[in-house]
Structures are given as C-alpha cells and as structure tokens.
Image (cartoon, rainbow, N blue to C red; front, side):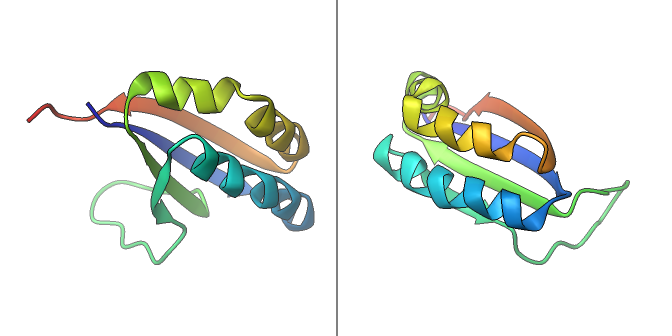
Length: 97
C-alpha cells in the first residue's frame, strides 16, 4: 500500500534551506520516493495556511518511507535543515485498492 510524507514548511533561512533541498531530493529518489507536490501555487479553499511550502512524497509503503527518513542520506540533509525552517512532517498510509 502506498504511503505519503506530507510536509508543511515555513522557510526562514532560504540559503540554508537550499543546502537541505540539494541533499533531500536525491535521498527521496534513492529510497523509491516520488514527489507529487513540491511547492507550487496554492489556493486556500477553507481555513488558513500560513506556511510558505507544501511537499507531498509518495513511497511504495510506510516501511520504505521510514527507511528513507532514518537513512544516513536523509539525516545528513535534515542536519542541514535544522534552524532553516519550521518543519512539520507526517506519514500517512494511502487507501487500499
């Protein structure tokens, strides 16, 4: 069953965040992830959305997403991100067929 990493981000240090992005993108691909949403134009239909970035990554399974998250490659990226953004990430399993 596919699983999705949904990340809501407010970037506070753009240059430092770019260092994170340069490492995170290849790590996503290395562990079988596929970006479905990566920034882009947002239209708020209800409520508030104060963050300046939204990212959704599809993985083949929750296990694969967790392997990515705990990987040395992603943890190196994460280390670059600390202090560069307010960052909220949740792992959600997809609906079964």
